[in-house]
Length: 191
Figure 1: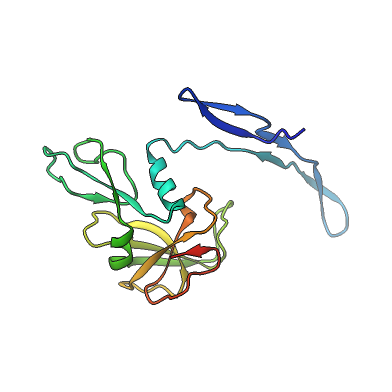
Figure 2 (figure 1 turned 30 degrees about the vertical axis):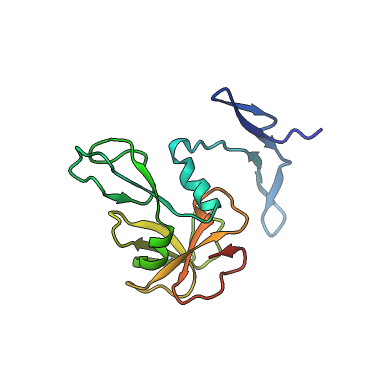
């Protein structure tokens, strides 16, 4: 019987079924001379992560769209400000934001604001190294988006365009960037 972890929504609440923590056999850790020094104690853990009000952003990435938000509160000093990454509430007036599609704007105006190239990553990194982390600015957008460059070498001010994962993971890595002159998307991504 398959007891794989499953999660669904029923009557507005999460329902779960199956194994969310599975122990695996221990493996000895030995020195070169064979002396036992320790043991691995592996566990498979399924983590449930709720997106809440940010779910449209990740659904958009899966559909090849880059969504941001805009303040439309007439009483807000910063009405009209556009934000990416996606925000649910305006940071200035706390009113609920309107979802806006920034895909076309990103394709035309996205530029590298700053970058760092690294081969040392976090414990659960799934990106191939070296990783070209980039900070992006778009025309008319009030904030900077962090992401990564898949094709090309980054330069400050360089124009880039978004690419989206063909088989979405519903995480931020479904979005990546290539230099603006890239004609063919990298394997596993589409323009």
